Amino acid sequence: MTDMTKPEERDTAVVLGASISGLLAARVAADHYSRVVLVERDALSDRPVTRRGVPQGGLPHILAARGTQIVGELFPGLLRELVAGGARVWDDGDLSRLCVCFAGHQLLRSGTIPEPSSIVIHFAHRPFVEWNLRSPACPAVWPRTFPWPSSFGGCANCECRHRGGIRLQ
Image 1: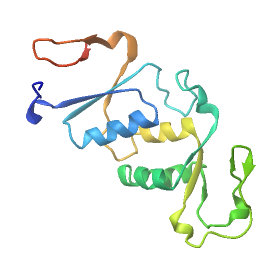
Image 2 (image 1 turned 90 degrees about the horizontal axis):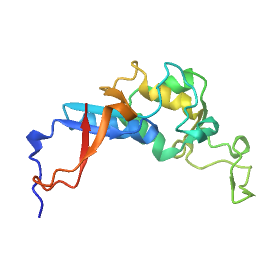
Image 3 (image 1 turned 45 degrees about the vertical axis):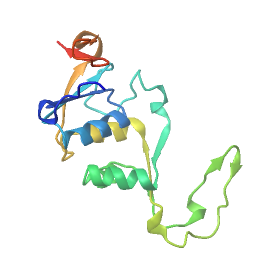
Image 4 (image 1 turned 180 degrees about the horizontal axis):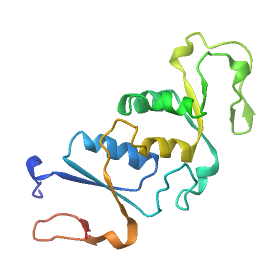
């Protein structure tokens, strides 16, 4: 069994990557650590632009029902900001307004969902979602961001029997 760091000694969390998942991880970590450090390889713009490290970023993205619920809980007001900025919302259950294909097969486009509020989908450009998640207007406690290559290096501390970690410089 390895020595575990005592909870009171774990005052800093490090998250690698500032994509949507990294930003969500940093937000959750902010509830459990006094300091969250976000390390990102790409320069983060003050506007919504596609980043080199996220080549699929130029494609349309959706926040599906469960994702919408989680993001809404972690970032109160964010969904309103997305819509105010131009994101489209499908929330009325009208299937004629939704075109979805799976493996080349288009789903039925007529009728309505019995409980429209159970499936709410936000459509937005991925850089726009990430930019809003990073926005100072977002009421989360935001971490300090470091550029990738010069700010960290791997380390292994065999004396403490940790499997590995990073060292910020």
